[in-house]
Amino acid sequence: MGARVSRTDFEWVYTEEPHASRRKIILEKYPQIKKLFGYDPNFKWVVTAMVLIQIISLPFVVQLSWPVMLVVAYCFGGVINHSLML
Image 1 (spheres, rainbow, N blue to C red):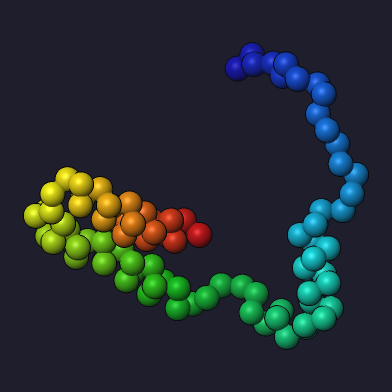
Image 2 (spheres, one colour; image 1 turned 135 degrees about the vertical axis):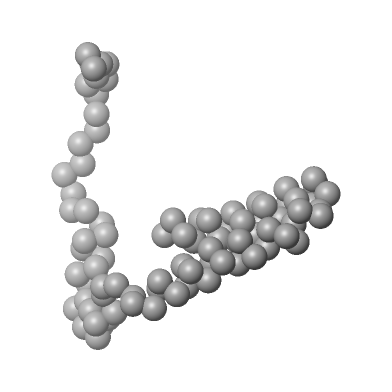
């Protein structure tokens, strides 16, 4: 809302986007990969299991000390939450 761009010295790259060219090379070499594109219908069960694991773990982590709770939250919860973002 009224903000202005203060920088005008952006660097423009006129080369091809690397992911598109790499994808083209891989598909030419391995055309069978194309059938793996799209949605995985079983992934809904994986997501449900990950959420249920977090909910079911609640009664067990209530009894932990704070240092152990932080480690469990970082390692266990962080990994599951990160995988849910993918």
